Length: 489
Image: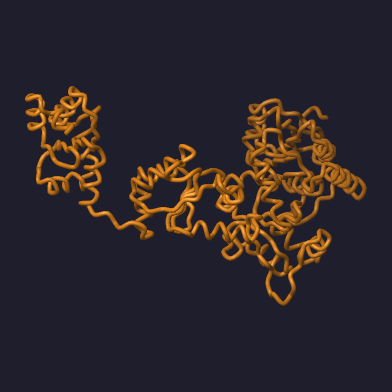
């Protein structure tokens, strides 16, 4: 399917180094990523070969995408056919999908043969050749059951994310993947499509791609459409903002909706009806909202707080108990409708799920990290769930965090002063388990504890919340054989 180099032929690229060398030369390059199993690629390669004859002063290069993964990854190739255009060593344009007319125009522009806005008309893509090739490619796409003239690379998405994307696409007859939501679009293009759908008076679902990066990036590959918004009708991609505007203005969009049996809302309602972006029934959606808001702190878990049925649920229950938070829970094992529905509603595929004042916090790993960083306590305080902790409360909490608690300079494995080291050694020699806190890491605790305990120096050793003393007292107790007994009463 090719040979030679520039001058009216197509050359197969054998390595990244070869391509880099051609780029550095500054020559105009047009690169075609293809796959031997893709019929649309083969058809577009015929167009590509014709174009190489029309523009002999440019280099027409071909890369078998799956055989050259390093090159494919560098140019973010997720579907074939895919074209990259270079000028003066830089990428100046890209084209995804089988579109002969667009390819001809882009080739002409990058070679400087036409001005922006003009249409290319090379000899080999004239009145006969161009439409014939385009019709052939379109027929192939229809035969493959796809409105997209491209094929996903085998190294694309795993079955799990493909299934999830398909479920989202099929969740409504008209489905819009956008930035933001219909009430608060986060980009002008998304706002335009929302306005168009309202003007068409159709019910539609939406999904905010800014809230889920997996969906955002996955859908680009799945649909072979690199931008948002993306509008679907009965599972079929219609396109983005520009296409929606053109179809709306020409009346074609209304015809598509009618042909697909999409319900048109009566004009007396005034605006298009916006369904939930999840495909859930109104009753289930309402029920989930009621459950989530039934308590300021709500945990959807496996089992019950007294009998967790998984370690992750048990972990979050313990975190909430440690934070001394009153919370309600729902056993998702007892209700499969809630279990499956909440995954879609929250865009969170696993359990447990922790909500605070109706807002999803996350699962066990996030809850644990937030507890360690203090972020969880901050949120609980800001939301009015718990009272703001005073320094005295914080000190009491630290002191009681372990039956034997040592406030020292450094850590047991790396003491930062001789007195702290001596106390650590004494406790270890007696085989006493103890917790510790490095007062060098928190000056508020360091200074506050001096006042709280009425003891001006460190280390300070506590047992069951009561001060035992400093280094001299600990060593005296050990030397008298009383240390272990004192810390086990």
